[in-house]
Image (tube, rainbow, N blue to C red; front, side):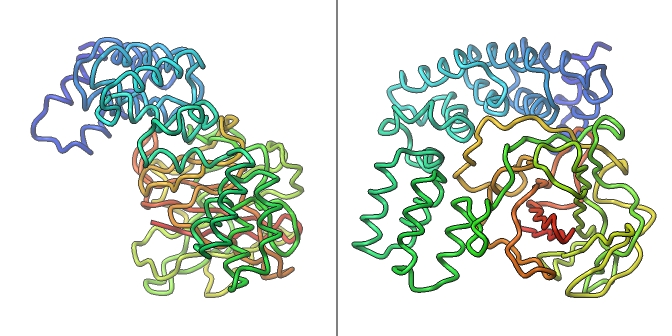
Length: 408
């Protein structure tokens, strides 16, 4: 049976639910050479199945590199009617000419909202907002929040005027999401006009500055991140951990290591490797963990009980994996909210919150902690992660303290 026939056989099995079909297709592709990028591109070059195109394009978005295969697939999808929607998964890797072609297709429609290119154009707004800014007045309303990222100074000043006239805090939030130097300066100037200090501090973090120290609230440059086989990258995902970890307050199960980031393999000038932890249970008894990695390689758990880590883990399918990174196309920071179950892994940059939230304070030095990484729940090329939503990792490098926050 050919690879394409194998995919079509899974799609045609009416006894399987959609999620199961998707996972079986991922397993088929993951077992192929070069993580199945060539097979995926070949399938997308000829399929007429809308669900199959979406599953396979989504798989391609979970693997690093493969620019040629992703571009070839998107070129064909652009010409394939409703299947063009699937190309939205591939936007971060596509050349400028092809992105502009999708935008032209969208703008040429009498009813752009009905265009198959609509979802692709929205994704372009997330990753390359400058490319859409000239057409802002022709975009669907839900796309415009994505264009806040890096918006011109005139828009910052306009939001500030509306704030001064109405005290509508959503206008200051929109200003913060522009995340330029001018936006941060205007927020600083507006400090005395915001009634609640905590609101102003949250806005400063959102804009890219920690309110107490004035340091950046994230590390640059931002990177997209991808879970790969153990040993294929310098950073560790899942797997056994030596040391005490937080314990669930309800079921008393120990947390698991989600991610270890190797400082020497990151461009941030970190002195220490960072580790982040979360629970495999579904109790949701807390929304954060805070752990210090001690100089001798041990751990100290804050704000709750601790226990030795388990020898086995269930958060990461197949046990220990690795993480590799690629530079993110949007270095300013995505301004639209993330969607639970559809959050891209990220290292560096600023958090794309599901719901805007505060940065935690380091329990050692008392200062707010910068964002370092996020791991989105749901899919990997190897199976589903053991949590939904998104985990946000914050790191105080001076104190070797990590805090992991969960949103769903």
